Image (cartoon, rainbow, N blue to C red; front, side, top):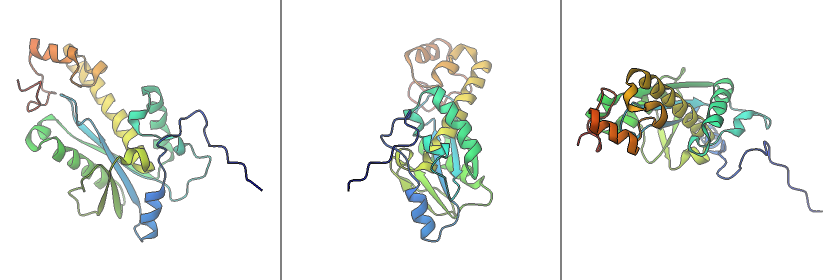
Length: 219
């Protein structure tokens, strides 16, 4: 007898690139306790910090848990990211976030600053995780073992959850910077190199929130 397929939970959400807990379970089975996921937001913009978050999921997540709604932050509208943010804060076992500001980015370079922000976020977890799953191709500069996961925010639930936190927190920081430097429109473009943003930089020059070594600012 052919079994009917089980209905997908949360049918109002698209189910391509659904992140799972497969990697977290794999490394827990290998003996690592408290497996964390980490991701960053803000590598590309001309202004503002690069923000990272780290998340530890519960070891057991019920099928009805809203954490299964979480997706890569880039695949969600702002409204859904904000809703997912509240779910991640409420449902995860532990979380932390950190950042590297524009001066650090200029001094280190953006890749090093992104990895450092993720390292700081992971070190903010208490107690420290036994292993960290890192979105991208690079390990963290940390004493805690880390495993790079290419496109991890699409496939790994703890990394996807961290991507939500990092993106929402960074957007909120840019909205605060907009109040401090209202000429640049940070609240609307979040520091990205839009035509409007580049025009204001040409007219007024960069402000302290800008990354002075980035093309589009340094020129």
